[in-house]
Image (tube, rainbow, N blue to C red):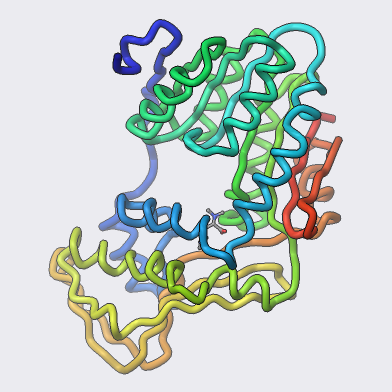
Length: 331
Ligand code: AVJ
């Protein structure tokens, strides 16, 4: 049975216009500007999403394993914090991962049944993961919300008669600047009642060696993930990028707490992008900025939460102390 016909499944499609600019527009603007940059959301085409899954398994990329370790140890404790009536679990981002299952299982153990509201812009990802979850858990009800996060949260807010746990895993917050992260959490805060909680995974500041290896693994998976952006430009926009002539680079700026990811031209070169009627000239060493991954100290997480009128009620670290899972309460 497809998810559309499942008695415990429903889907809500936000009719709000998405104001996201297109790949073509962003590439045209980003490659012409100085320094050159392309927003990191374009890394996730089909091949890029596949490569990101692979990144999560490389030995140097500790984030996914660390967060899973915390959830394995703490899912019951997190679930047990919600006493009394029914509970709604809302997740920002796709819920296909093993990590979400740990929480779902914990909440089913403590509450018997669960309403799960995954919010994602991709209906196919939502439907696929919903069907898996509905097959696995008889006491689970899924309402998928096809929407951007902030708009989706308004729907979550309107839907939930019960106490809700909103989760945002994977240190996705790392792609936001400190200012953007603050406004994002302020938006989440508006969807929370006093009894609700936000569970957010945040990667911690740490030794440069560990961070630079995590974002430039020896097997070259992260490099392929980055370079896939040029493959995408070549395919979708008629680009002429030579993938051998650009190199993936990850540098940690300790002051800012940010891993800066660039594609660096290995020689002086001209590149045409036919679809945009663009002629580009790259100097040797010239970079295209493609991603930032911001890291936090525990004090920075406290301050971030406070700026959004949230308080860190609990914080758990993995055994190596690299990653944090934070339970935030409205205050
Ligand atoms: C998906 C933003 C959490 O910053 O660690 C991983 C993306 N980029 N390796 C991260 C990413 C290169 C990832 N986030």
